[in-house]
Image (cartoon, rainbow, N blue to C red; front, top):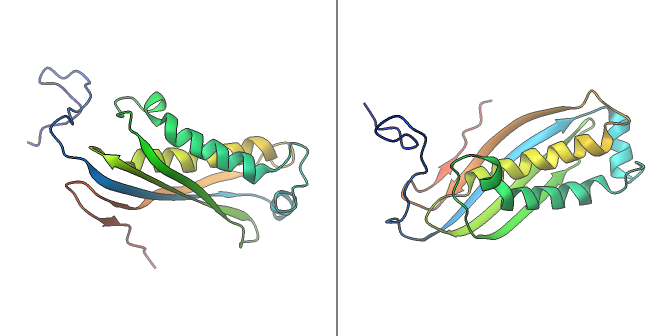
Length: 160
């Protein structure tokens, strides 16, 4: 049986020891979306909501979340993030696509940081627009790609 990396020999939760791993350049990209009424999307596009520029606030929230990932996810290592960016796709009629890209040079990957960034950006959009659309749905959050480290490159395969 494969040893579980986050459990000690006595079954207790533990942080994985990455001390002997070498530093490598790492990057992860995560995506997700938030589905809403077309009228809500239009208000966000035109900065017409009372709370202000939803996308600017969600972008900052996503970047901050990537930096705070070890405070949110137990057993995640604190890492030095060299770059974090959030992009929004407003090309649909009833959703906003969210992409987070996180980079680091270190001993462990940034997949969790990218996933947390997308999640918090989506939650921020929900929070800022809930007064006009409580039925919004956060969906399809996934790791799209990662590179660096011992396991190399991963790219999500899309089903058609």
